[in-house]
Amino acid sequence: MERSLDTGVFEQVDYLNVNAPAPDDSVARPPMVVTDPSPLYAMTADFDGDAIRLEDRVWQRMQNGDIPDENGTDRRAVIDGKISVSPLTAPHTVERHDRLDDVAATYSP
Image 1 (cartoon, helix red, strand yellow):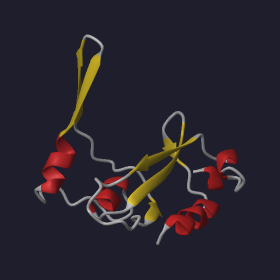
Image 2 (cartoon, helix red, strand yellow):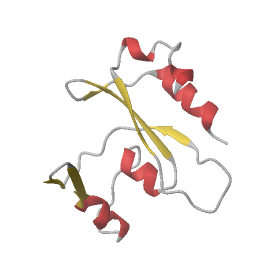
Image 3 (cartoon, rainbow, N blue to C red):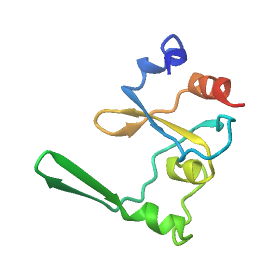
Image 4 (tube, rainbow, N blue to C red):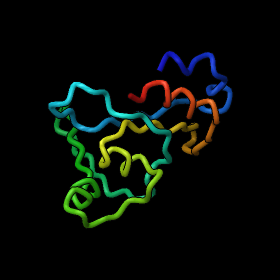
């Protein structure tokens, strides 16, 4: 996301959360969209010595069509085959920045 460094985005946000769909056989890069984090969470983390195993039960249900995540959310974008970028602050809030949409558009095919 080096293109975002000179846009002023990081004057308003602390980090960008990027989620990408699982790769397929296509050589084309998926489009990138700016999103909000999904408000639906059902994640567990199991610690086993030095290993951490994460399980997101919402993703499992979405793949079966059980949870219709809203358009504009990170999870919906990934399910739709797009790269999701959510501009976030710490503590966790969402701060939209117009220039980030321009950056995402430069990555889209």
